[in-house]
Length: 273
Image 1 (cartoon, rainbow, N blue to C red):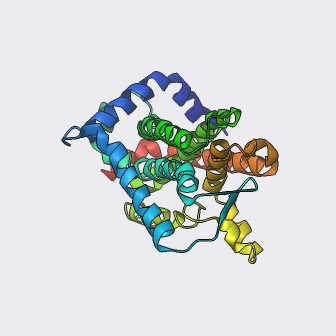
Image 2 (cartoon, rainbow, N blue to C red):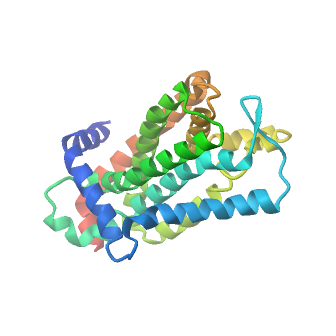
Image 3 (cartoon, rainbow, N blue to C red):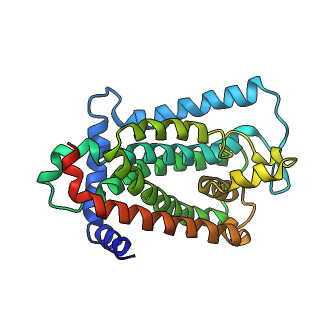
């Protein structure tokens, strides 16, 4: 618990620095591209069009029902895909955020725990842009802004908390065992198909055990929350309060584990250079 409090205090104390470093991170990653930061939008847009074509145009799909109403596949996919892309990029980049900066660790005058966080925030800014684009698209397809959109504030905060907790763990392990990053990348690619992003896991209703196991994935909670906000079905985190308690319980456990690991090993990170 002491390590967790220490890490949280470091984030609060250096929040201004996190925001500055995250903006610098975005610029530095795209400085050699002709289109610059535009690729941060173009790349996920191309991916969602490919998944839309493959999973909707080529395949014959069962109707998708949200809140008792049948919806088209594209808005259903759009409501969740950019959240998934934000989570995927944050976990991948967060896991290598420390070991890729080992050479500059000796020159830093701020805690190492802020490194995964400013990487996550650099992806979060792009997510805000994609969320804005998604909202505009939803207006043109007959899904106007509703009071349920307020849920986005909660679910974005929940996403950042989860991603930070995961990144503390993965960045520590990746620094010690470099092969772990490759394993993590492969695992996340698999999770894309198991998180309810590309197909509704309710199709497995005849296999309740498998379906319930898949719902243990915290990303599924966030994805369903985003869809509830976009389609205005309900206040997901309230109507599914048991799931909310499970999610935050898991986040707290992951944060405690990640903080303990990070504080224990960060003094020795430079030894892995």
